[in-house]
Length: 317
Image 1 (cartoon, helix red, strand yellow):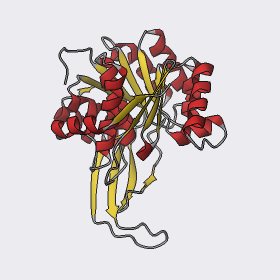
Image 2: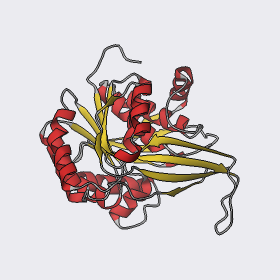
Image 3: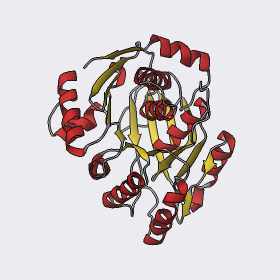
Image 4: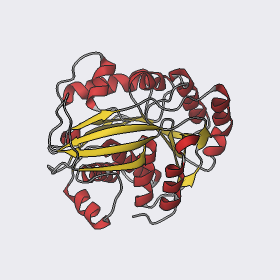
């Protein structure tokens, strides 16, 4: 979809996981639930972003922490997908997360603790950080933190990347998001619930979401605030301009990876220097397609082009 070869992109996943996804009609707590199907695969927010970026045509470098005891599936994925493998291996086992997907698309996540990264591992990662992002303009840092990595340490990494002139797309939640905001990443992508948590109050409609995003942007001097709203689409505050995208109604198979796919779409479009409308159209389209399938990735580029054409995009302020 590109007419020139842009710089490679770097995705960092501090806390990857082997996702065990099970499918059933209806989850019933307290009793035995039989799955119709199951799938175990390497995942984590930054890894999901990397897979979509690769399908779009990007050269992607991937980094983060992997547990030595079960690292093989991640290295195999990098080889299969032609991702540049820059993971740091530390003692222990990468976590397994369970995702239970019901027939109506509702997903229940059981997220287990990750590996515990000691000070030696942290220092090794920090010594490599600038090497990891050499030749890269855009860095995606996404997901939760493993044990041993404090939100303040994450904030330090974000500052290092920003001071090196990198445009960081940051997608996290909770204490990690709060600390990361202080480092002024270039783009953040809270969903509407995460934005409400930051604001400390319910945000009932678009106007309330936009007011909160503007307050966040003003406080932390963040250029781009992307608010994902599920089936209601996305609001994007690009510096001082508001954009909105609405996808068509989709038949939802699973929402797993939809937000990560959206981040990948933004990273690709911005790295390609696309105009805002085209970038938002792509990001919304890859996210909408993600909910119609199991797992992340783009299998059919014609289907993607058709979806992009069906996205309603407008500058609203």
